[in-house]
Image 1 (cartoon, rainbow, N blue to C red):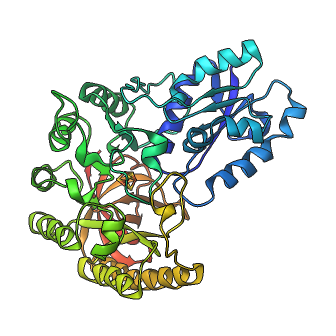
Image 2 (image 1 turned 90 degrees about the vertical axis):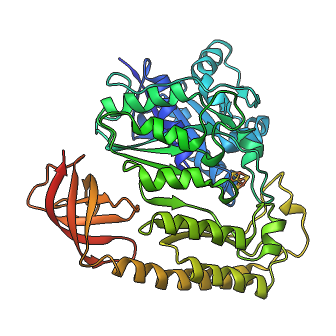
Length: 448
Ligand code: SF4
C-alpha cells in the first residue's frame, strides 16, 4: 500500500505548478491526501513574495507538530521560496521539521527523503545553481494524483529572474533566469493534452525574455507558435510579461494566432516615472502607454490586467495621482493591487521615506474604488454579446450551471440544458455583469 502525502501550497501559480511536480516525483511511493491527519509526509510549499510569509509558514508548520506525537514516523518538510530564503534557520526555529528544500532543491525530494530515512538527521538543500537544468517531469495516467481531469494546466517555461526590481525578492529566492529547453516544454504540453487538457498557461517571471540567453532557443513569440502546433490544444495563455520586453513580434503572434488567447497581464506597478525608476522597472509610463497602444491597435478586443504597488518608499501624493491616472488611461479589465512592504535582501528595504501604513491603506482604497468602476463598465459592455467560452467545470456556487473563461480571461457562469460539456468550447450569450464574473445563457457547442 502506498504512503500518503499532504501538501499545503502558498503563493502563485508557479508554486502550484511546483506542487504538482512534487506529487508526480513522489507518485511511486506516495498517494495524495487532503487530510494532514492521515499523512505520512506533510510538505508546506511556501511563498515569500507577499507580506509576512515566514510568519505564516511557521504558524502553518506549528499546526502539524502535534501530529508527530500520534505518528512518530511522520516526516514534515518545507519547500519553496521561504525554504530557499531561510534554509538552516528553519531547522533552528522549528526542530521538528525534517526536510528543507529550496526552489531548485525540491526536484531532489526523493533523494532528500532517502537521506533523511537513513540518517534521521534534517536535510537542507538550498543551493541555487545558475546552470541548473530543471528535469523533465511528465504527467500521465499512472502518476497523476488527481482523479479529476483538468481542462486547463500550467507549464513552467522558465525559472528565476534577472531583473532585480528593487522591491522584489524573486531573483534572490528563485535564482538567475533559466529557460527550459523548448523540446521539454513541447513534450510536457503534449503529455497534458493526452490527459485531456485543452488550455495551457505558460509560466515564467518574465516570459517575454524566454530563450534570449540560450544559443539556438526560440524566442517567446516563436515558442508560442511551436506550442500552438500541438494538435488537440485549443488555447494558450501566458504570464507574466515584463513591459520592457514586450516585442512587436509577440504582439503580432497574439493578434494572428487563433490559439493564443486575447489577454495579457502587463504589470505597471506605478504610474510615476520617478517611482518606476526607483523600482528599477526600466520603462517610463510613456513607454508603457505606447505598448498598450500597439496591443490595442493589433488586438482591439484584448483584455489587459496589471499589478499595482501603492506606497513605495518616497511615493508622494503627486506620484500616487499619476498611478490613478494610468488606471483611467489604460482602463484595465482587472488589477491586483498591493501595499508596498519591505522584503529581505531587496534594495527598496534600504530606502528612506517609508510611507505610513494609514497612507498606504488610503491609497489602496482609492485604487480599488477607481478600478471597480472601470471593471464594472468593461464587464457591462459584454452584456448582449456572444462569446466563446472554454468550459472548465461546474459553476462554483451552483452545480446546475457551468463555468469557463472568455479568451480575454473573464469568468463566465452560464445556464445550460447540458451539464456534460466540461472541456468543450461553447458559445454563450452574456446576460448580466457581476463584480468579478459574467453570467450568460448557453447558445451552442463549437468544439468538443
Ligand atoms: S521582473 Fe521584477 S517583479 Fe518580476 S520577478 Fe523579476 S524582479 Fe520580481
